[in-house]
Image (cartoon, rainbow, N blue to C red; front, side, top):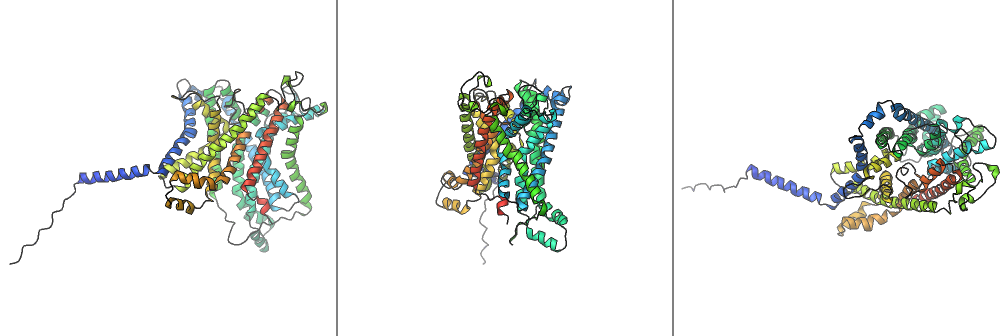
Length: 603
């Protein structure tokens, strides 16, 4: 007899509801594990900080304009009898100044970059260094220097050096769009110079020589080889200069407001300071949109095309033979540097020493630097080095720069670490990257208005921050986040991942690695970036002009106030101090950076 076949062992079948429950349980466990990772917690915490510093002020700005009683401000700005003077004419003036700044900055910066990089004129290295200084100066330094030289008697008060010497100055040269455009160009051409010089330094001279050997003319070589390589830098420099010209506040305020030449920046400043905050906030949003569109176009222009000029083979920059044109070109280049770098500094220093405003024949005095109160001079104002208010402002300015540099440096390091060294959710990293770039699109005066809108009144248990040092620091950190992230990313790129992986194998946690490995190894790069942030805070007026108060003064705001009240010697003396601090810190940062300048690499 054959044995009956063995019955298969009974199998317990899992029902569909049980399977779904297990799947959900596993997903929840994976989610809990991901959310409790130190890197994820770090990313979430950093994103919350960014939301408070960047997104919250912008939402506060928008919400204020949409609140009941303020919604009519949109109609007032865009479609009312006052729109012409409130928005459209200032917008047209802003675009005009931006266009003039972009065109002139590109022409001057491109010319100097060509002279420094592509020629062998004697002293070109000094030319290159001096061409970068105007951007390190406060933007109001050049405006004050222009005012000291070309001011006429159109609006009363003291006149400038030329008119005091008997030389008549027409109104169009003393006030309005011409001096605003010229002084903005003198400040921002350095942007175009640095970008175009770096691009020209990458043009391979061997390619140009090879093209000429095939019979191509110099014009065709320049058009088909050199120009395509430099074109992205030219466009980016022009758009950056355009954005800066559109959003600059202090130059139009000093040289345009006396003759009612308004731009968006000066119009929104006037609205907010006179209590018309709703319309001022609407104008701030308009300015943000304009600047964002320009910066977006700049980013696309810089990233749309790529020209590879660095290969495995050696290359060299080819010098252009100038022949009989050498001396005229050298004279023109030095004339530009003289007018934009050397003379403005000399004018500011000299005009702070004359007894009567802008009168070189009145004799020199140190009163405006070291003197006590004298009713016969500056209505009894003390010299800046003996004035307690100036000393307080100097301390506040330095402390503000240091505080923002430290805060922005630490935040930038954390953001950069999360973006480059972690494997967090893509949506989280993408959101962080986008938010950290947003402040680059916001003009300083508009960001200051946003901080007033959000933190100028109590928020829950938190008191109002307006008029405190804290709001200046928070606004400064928010404004400099893009620069600190870039500096931290550059520093992190020099630290091998192997070092950190070895620490992980040794059992070091995230925060131990950040404290003991990442921070020490990136300290030099972070310090360099911190110095540049410090310089930006010391010389910037647009960001703090709405936030600083008489109880919390800073040097840049005092300079503007002195100039507005016609205390020219005091305004110029304070500007000299700011310029010395800014230029010295910039030179220190470049030395620590050890960056090779394009013209020094040319052979």
